[in-house]
View 1: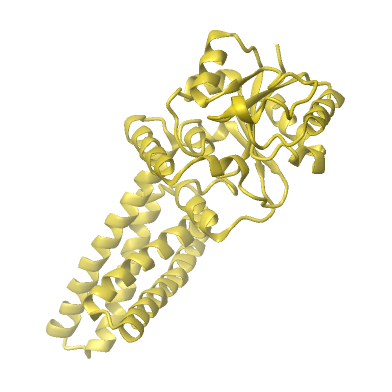
View 2: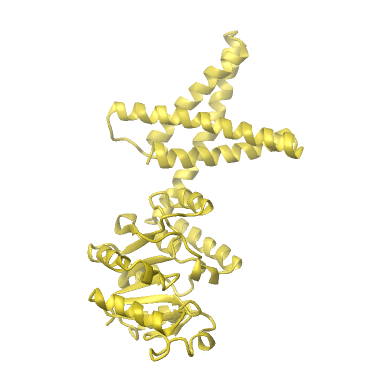
Length: 341
């Protein structure tokens, strides 16, 4: 029975010396560790590099091979560790103890957070997994029974998002990790696999009632519906103030915009994010934040509209639709991660 089964790319092991050092580091933490080399062409790539250590002291093969051996009990382990670069433990020795402590504390999934994350990864994470700083990390640990409950042999693409889309987030923990290095094992997933993997994740979120990602997707849909209702409110009050009350149309527009912001806020507060708790003062703070960020959304919309129209000669109505989409992303991401954090 291993305490930790390290899942590492078959061509990322490096030398047998590095593998032995990693095993030694685990032993110094009183943990019995095994290696599973995860690669399609592992027979050619792993025949010699391991030296005296037999190739993958626990085994080697594809992800379905790994899943089958763990399910059947051919490999007995308390936890499975995904490591995009096994040498990471040579440079960040304390990481082993921190990840293991997270499991010992009762968490089903523990993630090593990179100290620097590319912007595109940050945006994806803020949209789908806003509670986590590095939901695409290549270093994470899953408890064995959790792996069997939430994993399937046909998973595609980067695996951490799959687990985060299914495991309750109160059973997930993050610990400080290394800086953002080369993607390592994640480069093994081609674009086709990534797209199909995203399709799998979305299908799980739709089909599984308890999926935390389903909850987040519901918030996005409700936020969009509230935004559409705001357009109707804005247009309606603009007409009432201008045509019926005789107010100058620019003043009417300002009043209509503010009313639509207020109605949008109330709907989002009570329906989208269900913020029914808290003092009145906290709700006023959220309103101020929402109002301020809405101005940012307007600036994004106008900036995209001007840039596409003046810079790329795109028809202004088409450019405005694109601007609205960018403004929607701005409004949702900033409000989800600031106003209703």
